[in-house]
Image (cartoon, rainbow, N blue to C red; front, side):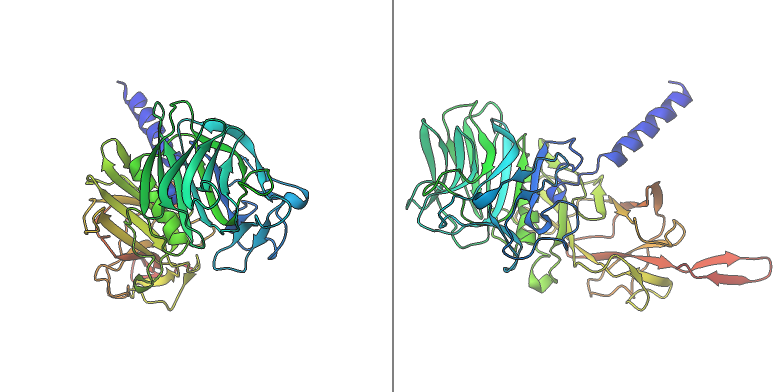
Length: 439
């Protein structure tokens, strides 16, 4: 191979790696419409503009719930069938009240029954005396309560059969309900908080319905309660990705009980690092996810020793994305980022592990004064909550578009915190050494 050809291939590979950031929920899928993530509705960002501070006032009727996946699969409604916006609780929600005379439901712009799909719904359902639907289509629906007074989660194929789990309907509880069906199988895996169960729906071509939130009927099968987030993939996510998304949703909505918890930095005792949680992980060679960014500015990829049932997840404390002086940091650091991240590096049994070295990239768009010469990675290696006794890590690579990468990082381990700082730089002149402060 000619040297110029080899160089071109290398450049294309680097570009592809830089362009393929996993920016979906928990870092699974992408928000540019290129992945199997086809719908992502977030009640804390109703218009999907990335700004969580411009939502409607409490009690406003919701005409459009905009899609954050990049596919513009928005959900809409008009008139008395509109749900309302609820910002009076701990978490913002779109509220569907099935006790009202008019059924409340919303139409999506994509419809079908998907025989190969995964959907996650974060919800606090209310028992108002009817059966309760999550997602509905003319041929099937997902049920938070299979039928009136059954108090069981299930799935219905209209005109064919009701398929009920033995899992109790999680009324009045912040919950994660998810359904997963692989292609070529008649089995749907149903997960409700910490419980899981497989349903045989009798057909490989049947699947997970998508058309409406709730059902357009009065008195039965309506949607009920506060919907926090709805995620839909038109291809079943693998087992590692399933665990990552569960942990992302659990951390975001108050430490919801889930089947496999590999992120505990969201606990109050750990400091409530609940925000922009994302992760990489591996269940086995066929079920892995080794490149993740999510909704935050941190991307982690290229682990050198990621083994079976091992995960590396992180979230932050919601500190400001700005450099400030006066924060605890080594003396060489002029200013430090207010925001701090914390890591869980564990296996599925909860034991601390080591996934090897990782590359950590930061998108520092909007933060001024940054260069490869002054940016430093700060890791709280002794886990005392301070960075002033740590050795700053240099050697960042500028990847363009305000993205800086620290490659082959080995110092971050389970429960450790990390952040960024800007260092004083030294200029050597002919006769003396002077210091330049980077702002």
